[in-house]
Length: 452
Image (cartoon, rainbow, N blue to C red; front, side, top):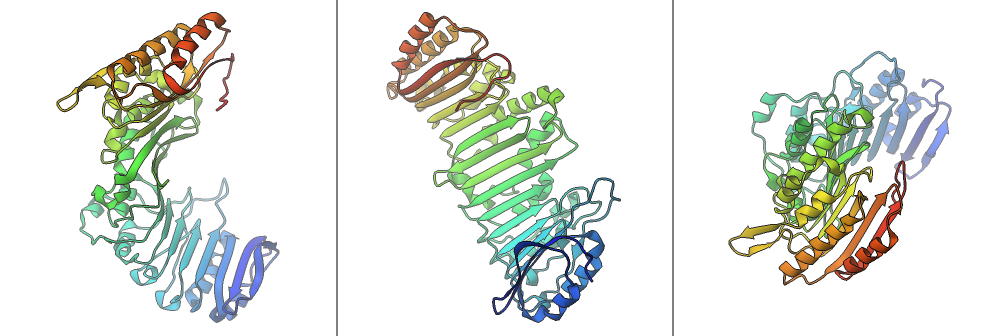
């Protein structure tokens, strides 16, 4: 008998009868009753289940449900102070689940087999945090070639730490998968091995979250971005279609997110010890500088035309901006945003006032195709607008193909009011260099807020 605890249920029979309404919190139920009806169940959702009921749930699942198409099991998350325990892992005998199409497991897992996963269209396993033992990766990798019907794959912290010897074993690769929605959160090396076992479609959504809890080194963190890629980047044909990259590092998140023209998404994110800790501002700044410097290395095979940077730009010197931007000759749009709106954009402006030389195109301004520029940050002096005007006027003069910017936005912040006459003159000069423009000074002392 199930203990008297609140639990969300959805139970649908093969005739379409909903025994318990969706998301209705009930006081109690019996697993015995479900076992008696197991031959007639089409959908079953139980979440959250107390840890104490694990044996009863296991017995129900071991018995099998021949007509079950959707199964969602959610175990209750460990409470602070609970004794450490392994991740609960259920057995789902494939012969007893011939109709299963969707399998969702929260704070729990299952030992999957090729015959079990071969007809799934959805597989979600969320292991949670705080467990002492998780799934072995090797048996899961052996199943990847059987994901021929799978369209959605979500795996979060459900595998044991990677073992180097494991990755040397050759495995067959699923060449034509249908998985258009992928979300993986785990150790970067684990993510790499999963992706190395399948060729994903060129469209869809791919989210990769590297779990680096316990790590704050900027060098180790940046290396993790690249470590999540498969051994053969051709397993990710979406890379060939990405045209926009957002490089973002704020106290609450660290990621590089890319999109195609059709809004297909490829997202690389890190969970590190440098997040959410004010005293580690310099660590975040150093990592952001590495992200700016290495964004082309990460997206080496992508035809990037739009770049957006949000982070502590005070840590990014002119040489880094030049090194970064010179690798994107097709760049049309650039956005640079200081995370605290306290750092001046002088270094990136100076980088844009730089020439590059190539054998085919000769000497041209860096990012010669640039026609949209947005900058947000601090205004140390109103004369910065003069520097920006000189840069843009020089680019217009040097680049015969780009006579004017299509879009320009400069939103700079100051603690004190600036000279109105001087600012008005600079604004008028700059406005002549763009079709659509917004040039503004926002006077705001203390903590600064975004109005865009």
